[in-house]
Image 1 (cartoon, helix red, strand yellow):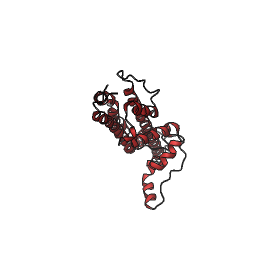
Image 2 (cartoon, rainbow, N blue to C red):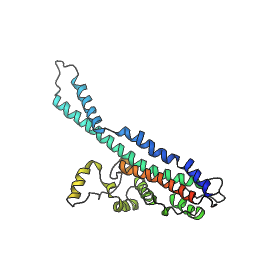
Image 3 (cartoon, one colour):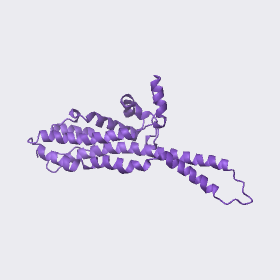
Image 4 (cartoon, rainbow, N blue to C red):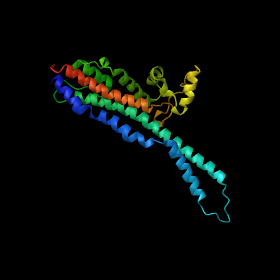
Amino acid sequence: MNGAYLEVQIRGYIIGPITAFREYIFGDVLPAFGDLNERADKVAREYYDTIGSQPAGEDWDIDMGDVAEDAQDRGLSWYQMMTSLRQSMMNLLAAGLFHLTEQRLSLLCRDGGFMMEPPRDTKLEEVKKWYVTNLRLDFETLPSWPTIDELRLVANAVKHAEGPATRQLRDIRPELFSDPAFEELYKKMEEDGLGRIDGRTVSAPLSGEEFFVSEKLLKGYAEAAESFFREIADHFRAHSDEYY
């Protein structure tokens, strides 16, 4: 098979789920976690209104001030639960995006037109070697590679918590270790030359704690993954007459 065939496969088939991830995650999945402040207020108001609407009998001894405090606590608990769930989702989506990228890269290697054996598994390290050996393409020469490699570290951090990946990410992406709930405080500290607070050990990234993939970062990773496949397709278009 030649480069022209591989380009068609990538653009017409391989890249599809990567594009769908970018479109539907941000268009349908994450919006479900929108307006959390307003929704938490609604939870509190509904609780307060429910208690306040109960008929007052001769044994009525409810202090509405206490009810207001209980309502506030309920709203806060709901908000904290949802923000943790949203962060867990963001972390999981980043890890999922990386493994989706690995799997789509590996899928091309299993095209029936190849005479050579495919990689032993879908791990990026193995697939990367296979592309160099059999397709004469080194991923590291592509513009999007540094972001894909960073996404690999993020996925490892999400799965394994504290370890080599988190140590590397603290150097190149320190904001991953800063709780966005305290972003204004972090900005003030940076303005004062104090830096961010990012020394905590990462032990529960799947619980939305200690490791914080933001929506902005996730979007950047999704766009980079799509660009990565387009760059691979562009490479094969430039080598359309070469056979593999």
